[in-house]
View 1 (tube, rainbow, N blue to C red):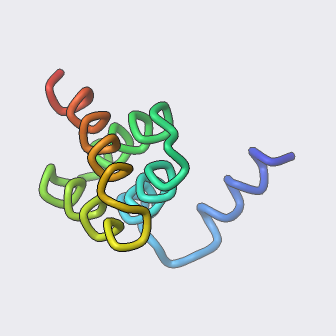
View 2: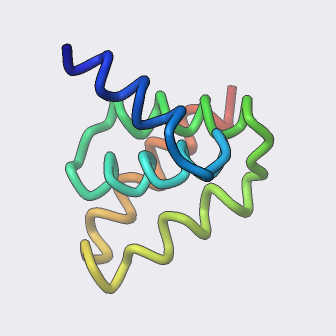
Length: 83
C-alpha cells in the first residue's frame, strides 16, 4: 500500500523525475539514511542530474540539518560517484 502511494504521488504532480529524486536525496540525508542517499543519488543521475546538482542539493540543507549530517551524506554520495 505504501509503495502504491509513492507511485501515485510520483505520477500526480508536475515535478520531473530528476527533481523528485533530488528532493528524496535531501530527505534521505536528513534522515541519515545511507541506503536512501545511495539510491536517490543513483536515480537522480539516471534521470539527468549532474554531480553539481547532487552536491548543491545537499549543501542547501546545511542550515537545516547541520554540517555533520551533510558531510556524512556527501561521503555517501561519493560512494556512488566514485564508481
